[in-house]
Image (cartoon, rainbow, N blue to C red; front, side, top):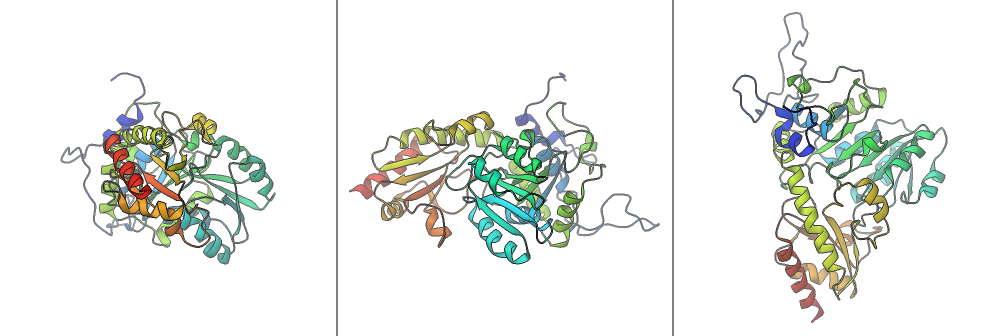
Length: 410
């Protein structure tokens, strides 16, 4: 094999080269056992004790995620919310955290209700405005800055490297929800973030059949003396062993929260997640190519007032996105209709190919009137439709939207 580093697409497709050692299967088995036998001296020499703490089916998907994000360790969770909330629950009551004003609605609601009652001090700011982010920092009290970029559903783009500098100067950690960038276009750890979160239900799985979440730690949280990066060919089988380095206290608490609060992923779901991850790059790249084409065509449509998509030069965050989203701008966009809220809802009712459904990142294209879903207090405009572009033909997707927009106009 050449010494040339393997591309991310190869690493994902090969699942880091896993071969099951007994049968030589190229797809790993599903380990359904909930418990593991102790040795005669009451030790666990195999490294497993109970599946609520860990399961062998996690090993390949966690190692692959760590490699794709150029991290040093990874954990899979029962949902994106379980992964995200673990990052905040690992802090102490009284700690101060900063998060975006516009972000995934369920986590925003959790921060302003449960997290606040639990004792965290929460500030919501426009993280795209670095002066506002800097001003929100409370010296000695701010422990975590949470970014979502691009952010759902307006696709605001925050400068990760600049935010990392702000966080670290304050002695805080920076965590990035990079679900939309999907590891394909951005690796936040290489830009200075300490932690990356993915709602793995979305692009990482990609088939709308698994609820899962993932966290990937950088060397500041778990320094193994090396990273699972793209600098070497497919690693030998010991890549699936848990890294021996001692993680810092924060990452240890995150791991403990997964086990003790019950946010563990099922073994079958972990297997399905690995199945989806192997086609991550071609799926996301295809959908992103279509999303760029749709955004450009819809921007010229007479019924549409605005297209929100980081890949458009007219988009406010385009220049930042161009610097930190390498190779594409993702497959999510939103459109705002000139005729307002009722026209947006009516358009959603008229589509035939697009599915009217919550979620994103699957192979099928989804469309949603997001303000109706988020409800009272949502920062989402009422004339907005959120589009998750799948892997169908882009002309077919445009034609379906066009006929719906024309039908409503009539």
